[in-house]
Image (tube, rainbow, N blue to C red):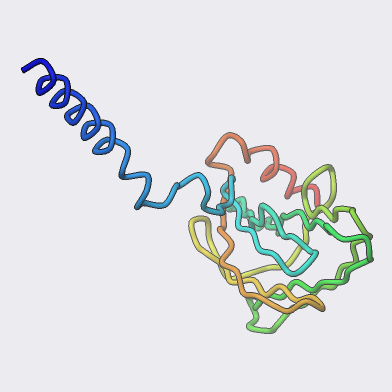
Length: 160
């Protein structure tokens, strides 16, 4: 009788442990999924990594494209940013980033890219990124100074 109780208790304990942990065996771990840990968008073009891309507007006619472009390789890389402007024309701006360096647009006391787009706060704008490694279209959020963490950046649009 004692052996039967011990065996039953062991089986119940084993089933309980297996039943409460088995979900990790079949479902993906969310923390392993790649995501942008900010409100901005991100993309990879070979060694050029585009991070925290945001188009800011202030409601008073001031605007600017913000982002950081990191070169994770040792060679100098060239990349293009493309938009469809308010007038319907395609606009491209080319940048060069040295090996293991960063090009900031709007961040770290750098000026944002000034390009007028037909958007308002809350919209999404399609941006074309190109480099020697390929090209990608990315949806970038359009934000204003509603969120306190962006008020200073949006206020700086008047000075640029």
